[in-house]
Length: 238
Image 1 (cartoon, one colour):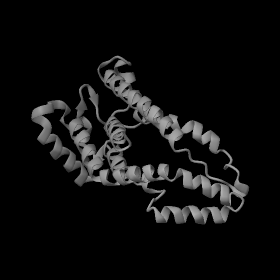
Image 2 (cartoon, helix red, strand yellow):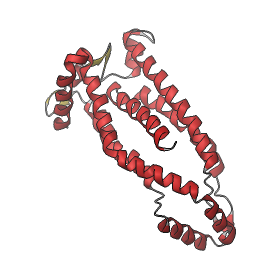
Image 3 (cartoon, helix red, strand yellow):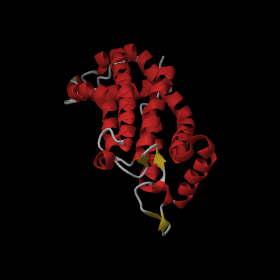
Image 4 (cartoon, one colour):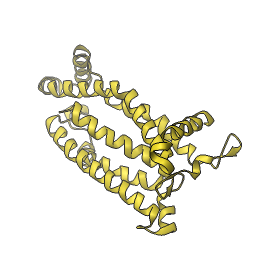
């Protein structure tokens, strides 16, 4: 934890001439961008996998018609098709999973009053008027929704909502282009899948809840990563 705190402090010192009192916030944004650059090759692989699965939809439909009444045979045939086409169903999950450690590091770093037995000096850093260790509820109690810190959160919420709306539209388009219909025994659609399909496009809006409940530093990571993902997906899935 102390090593990571030193890294953030050093990045903040480098950025201080440009960002002054918000240098630590800029360091978090830069750190997030570096993390996303590291996992970008996996994102590209996930995009290739998604395009391959879309291309394989006609063959998948034929397999469902042929083995719809034999779930085990259907599963083996689908796995064989994926192996032959070098498509991994889990590839799309890896970029998100590999980012979780960085998010939790930031969360704990800006949630603990002490680091290595000493006072956590990072908690004194701010983004404009909002302390990086505070939460939205602190901003509301300190100056209200349109106070100095409250306006920082308003800006973040507006950005997250815009990105979520963009992701919602793209998700709906991709679900129409590449429908997923896993089958249960007897060739019937899995119970509850229809409800999950309806909810899936709205998942991006849950980022608003995350921003509201985590420390501002972790919220910055989430907002930066979500925005990066939206731009990255727009480019890779065009």
